[in-house]
Image (cartoon, rainbow, N blue to C red; front, side):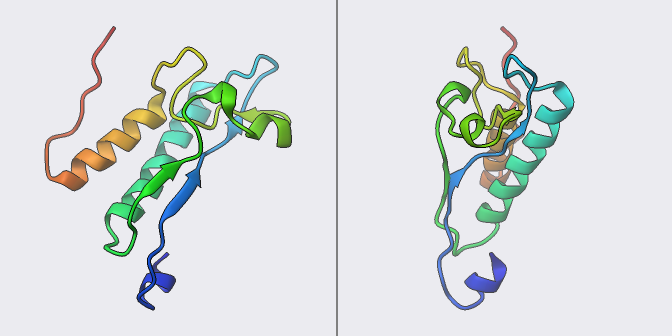
Length: 112
């Protein structure tokens, strides 16, 4: 990103998703979800820390509508919400990155 923004070009992050390995029921394990959260945070941080990154767009909303499983067998769970519309660690990572960039305190997800 920096190579292009150093040239004065805007570089938005678009169609962002981060696929992980899934089991036969399309479920990811906690290790994969934790790594995914780090990757989402890294991407969002890269954008918010670069004035020529106008924004981040996530590919879709929740896992069942993702294109990943159809193209990459054994991989999926690529989006911030699961099939039940529950936020995954990736969602919290995105919110924490945006909160930190705003200068406010870290976001603490509510317990259900």
